[in-house]
Image 1 (cartoon, rainbow, N blue to C red):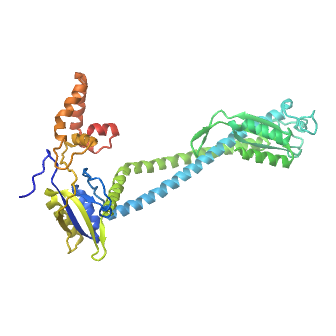
Image 2 (tube, rainbow, N blue to C red; image 1 turned 45 degrees about the vertical axis):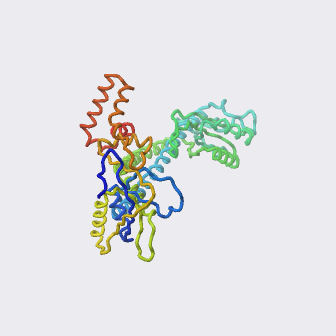
Image 3 (cartoon, rainbow, N blue to C red; image 1 turned 135 degrees about the vertical axis):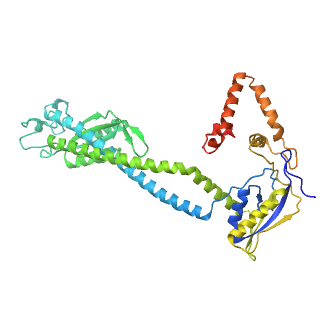
Length: 438
């Protein structure tokens, strides 16, 4: 008498089988059985450890071919290198854009400082320690000036041993910066600053930072070296500024041209990077499926034992008794494709172990069976509670939501999903819609 026919009312009759698989086709056999989806492998190596019987029947994902895996690995490595290269270039260009933007602000603000100093606004300038009553830039004030406010007597700040340091510093550190400079140089400096109205975006973390432009005048190279060290220690970026107004205008013009060229290069780089990432995003879901399948195959192979003498893999697996002919024909197909003369042997063995529960399901009963499995799985050969749920669940749901309008909306939504079933199956749904659809 043959095994009873599998029905939706009760879990299927299961049998334990032992498989002897040639080592050369081990991966292909597991892949083919994964396509069948009715085999659950047991972990032979861990049989000595007492474990709770597994009642949940799990399907093995079908694996891709070896050529697909190699192609995916090469393609992933190539895309990774290309995207990394594009991102590094984009980040470098963004850093350069920030530097040029800060430099332009320094040139603009420092030019205003110089113009005010050369036009005689010296009552604001801090006096040097050489003469408490003389401004630091008095020598410059006494020089005759040209049309642009530049000195025309041949003397400059460098000629009077007066130097300056210009740069940009985060606004949150400006107070500490002033205190450290005052105490270190004992007040022998003149510092002017102004706020940059627009925040500067840090390309490393995409955070907006409020910054200030500063220009510090002082006597002597040693003092200027100290100012530079203090500035850099507090995270300031220093930039070169010419004291001559004509040269400053040339610098501003040059910076604007470089910023314009850099913006064009940045735009092209970003478009290329976006195109690459968009292409990857379209294929990422399929690649993840391939990787999961390959991982499932090797996890299954690790459950087998290896016979060194016969160079075969020995596996034990549960399967529905009525599916044995299908499994044997599938294994024979794998052998034929591989061209092996030794077939894969399938032995049905007797055991006292409790078989796993396998409930047959179709497209209609899938959702109700999933609800039942979320609460628990029935024991082997017990009546399947998922079938009466087809009636009880909608009834109880209607009792909880006894609203005619709500029922109409739910019916319309269900009808729409049934009508567009095939397009929705090909679409990646979000978690909420997927839960309602399946």
